[in-house]
Length: 285
Image (tube, rainbow, N blue to C red):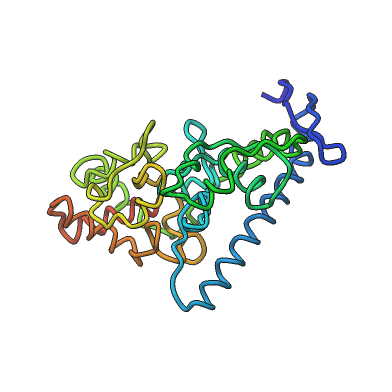
């Protein structure tokens, strides 16, 4: 692998110029997109947290970009067919299927950071659903000078290169997790939608609200009016990754709450012991 050239973007005055270089220089060349990504996330989280405190209410923290002011702010990485390793727990697509990570990168750079570039999404022309976006032609952005598009490959490469967090020693019971794996793939029906090893559905991983047993409020605000089968990663981490709970709005405070919900909704008839084993497996992936 080390003998193969790696196409890595090098930057000159903010414009992307591509050249072949050795793998040893990839990390250094990727620092600019990493810093850009960190800045975007910091700003978005800061704004949302400030608003949450000011309003005294919980703002849904779903994945992906908002389509217009009428939609919620969202945070996510991932892409169909090329799962990010560090952020597999956050998902391949948005909970409401706004778009992939490449869509999110383009959306933020053009519409949220007001950069000079090109952005296309005809769904934003729906004046009834997205009146502000349609009126301001957000889905038909064509700046004469495009300073954004050339930087997308490097940013996406960087996102895909980030490692997924691994459960620390003692985070789960190994013996129970083995039994839980069997339940996950069979009786609990988890693998029907969360297909190993990507732990989502290959292809169109979307479902109507009634399929998941919850309300459709968040789904109806998205273009496809559905929820996606979120990839499962870092479920053991309740301190940082899943501090706000599970699901798009944190409605389930613990994995036990999630398992109990699906046990009722799908009439799985899991025993308490089986639920515990299933949870141990979930914490292991």
